[in-house]
Image 1 (cartoon, helix red, strand yellow):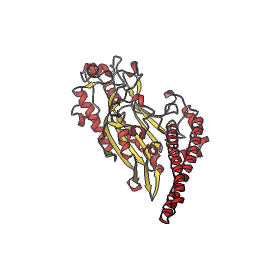
Image 2: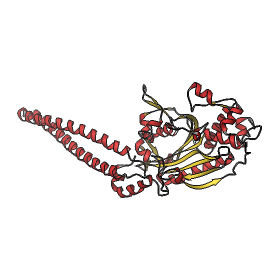
Image 3: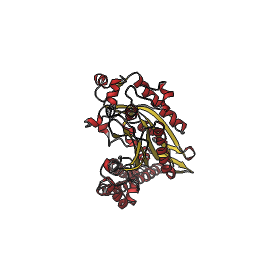
Image 4: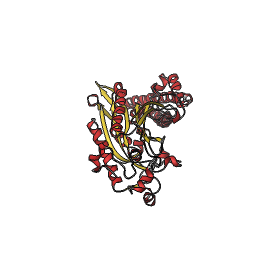
Length: 421
């Protein structure tokens, strides 16, 4: 969420920047400024009314002490009028603040200057491609066919138990999942990220704090009886560890990693492009989150990108990095890099990670600040997938298949305990 002061001081710059998102944001910004002016005026009137009430209370007390009960009675009537007025102003102020906050929630983050203009994913900018493309035979199988052939992932069984998008991993398929989770966590912790295990149910304040609410409530599973949401990513519970927190500058950077199951409704997702592991309602993911000094956050973003690169290199998977255009940029992000791995049998790129800098957008919602020599400033927050498992598994199965087996990347063998499926 943007600060009102930022909007007031930079309305022209923000309006121009938001054109990268293909949004004419100016009418909302003007309404925010107008509502905030109204809020400040009401606050001033309320402060004056309360100040007058306090002064009258003091005068009434002095009069009673001196025996001036008649004059005190007159002042009490005046104090009663002020009390009613203050109550009314307080109610108006509460409603105005609520209106202002709702307006602020409608404004997405300001795109970084590096964000290219564009309307959708076809306009994203490829900045790097690494790794050798797999050379598969003409009859190479897609991962859902390989999963059935080797009895390692059962999509129909998952459909029976829950529904589409909830696969059951079996035998070496389950072990491959566990191996990837442990490998990712080990890579992250060795890089300085502290592992945390967090709840996978989050409350409304947590969803609002990281920006999933009110933007993406339709994509989240909701438990009405308890007013809780299933976490769409570990970003939500991990980042919310620091909601309403002041961190010491000396403790920065704060680097955390966490494994969680993730849950997304993915409403409206149909077709062959979402078949198999390509798009699921429940999936495993390892996340990295950083709390940073604003002066270092873009260095941190590059470190995170390099870290994810190193993992994909070790897995020997061909990948590319995209800088997301304004039309494809997430609501909360200033700058995002997507990682896509090439799926040999499907002959298409599959997204496996997004690494983003949110600057102060989340920390303003979270009230997450840094104590920098007594000066309290908003922190910068960053997060990235390191990594999401389903499409990594899909690409391992497809890219390393032979006529009789699936080879396991060497780096995973110590974790799986086997070299082939």
